[in-house]
Length: 432
Image (cartoon, rainbow, N blue to C red; front, side, top):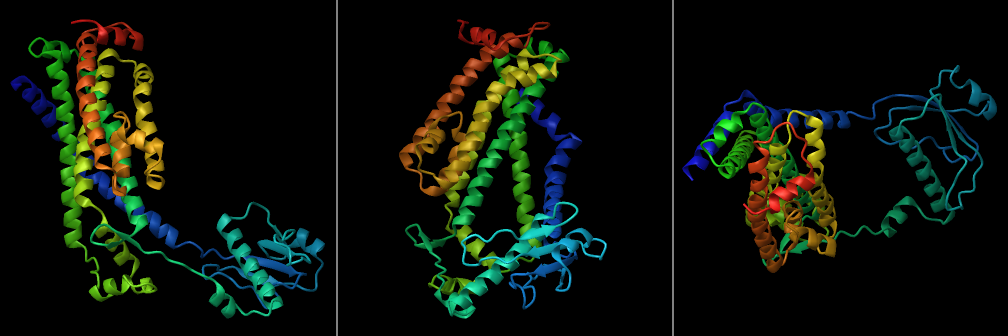
């Protein structure tokens, strides 16, 4: 046990003292936040590109002027004294960017067609969408007029139902979108952890094997102790990063002035028809408060550690049998990565159908449960399924640790030979 602790200490300190650890722990989250802030700023600044669009409206749909979207800064010029065939060819010479031609159409048809927008190159999807929306609004207005209805009457007839989701024994008001986002984020995080730290274990084993350090260490430490020390040490690095990220998030929450929830708004939000009195930010906070955070954190930590230990042992075994050839390593890890990717795919289905047979199986099967179960845990998983999933994962960790240790023991001292999966299985099942 003392030897395993020494290996853990070595693996942990070597990685924590690196400058790359400091960068990935502090620098990467800041870069990601800045990147998304820039994306949001770019998205919010859209719609200001100005175009001159010539319009010939033979159907007189837009005779009262173009009903533009607020974000549409384009200039629409209605032309009555030129033939459409001439303008189709000369609109660019006349100083227009596009030419919109609306021939006589029958608005009583379900789908109105033959409306054409001419341009030298493909029109941006957003610009095309704004023009289509304006024409659709005009057609709807004509149809309402033919039915002797005003827009106000039509708006009064339309129904916009909003169902309140009351969750738990305390009957708190839930927000489905918040639960979906949290579920996906937890599943995605576990998925990334198993891939990133699993490959980190594999590369660490490969580096020691290539540099012959493993030969020296095996002379004083058993291969199983060396493998488990490396796995736990690198896993401790991951836990340290998460602890620092949580502290950073807490500090940001204390420093930045987040708005508070108005208690009167919360009371009004519980009444039908009063949802508009609560801001989007308050609605998100209300949704977050309804989530079972104790169960979420417990399951996240359990499946984070369990999933990492399960796959790290496999990655360590692969690292012990490959040498300098990176292509060989990539081909060897493909079968190990397949169930991880499969788990992520099933997790995306768990968000929309948490009780489907495939999702239930994926949340119990130990090779996929670390990703699937954390994505499903928001949706009242039966306690029997949760216990069975956890027990299966623990037993699988013990089994694969024993199995991969036998491969590691042989592979770490093997040089100059390309090992196949068949040969690795023969090492694993042979008697010691």
